[in-house]
Image 1 (cartoon, helix red, strand yellow):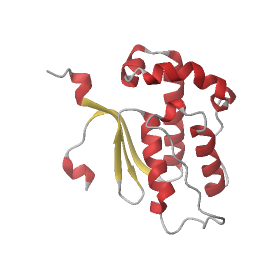
Image 2 (cartoon, one colour):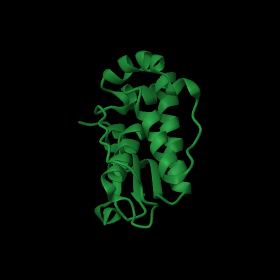
Image 3 (cartoon, helix red, strand yellow):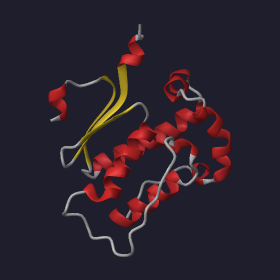
Image 4 (cartoon, helix red, strand yellow):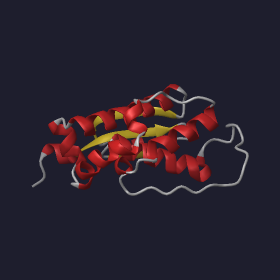
Length: 155
């Protein structure tokens, strides 16, 4: 039988176009938002992006990819003309050598519950970026550590 914490979802969000996402971690939710945005699902009223199309692929776990936050911030800067500031060490590859074994363990929610400092810091930064997107209206609703919403929330 599953325990109560495995029946809860860490993060649920609704985008300004009404689409919703759910994830076990803030970093995966950020990747989900980015995937939608990068695929051109952002609203038509956003500024046009000039230049050739670029495809960026990340591993299933953005926490282990040293380029994830750097490229994400560059995309925000290009699109919105600004981006949130992040701790400098989170933009350096050396940080990910220490973080990768924790992420590769396969249980990031458990590391969050235990309070593993590197995981908590990274996920908190990803959550702050999601809140930054909410402040700009890209995300209209953000729920953290709430029971999964009923089906009508997703329509």
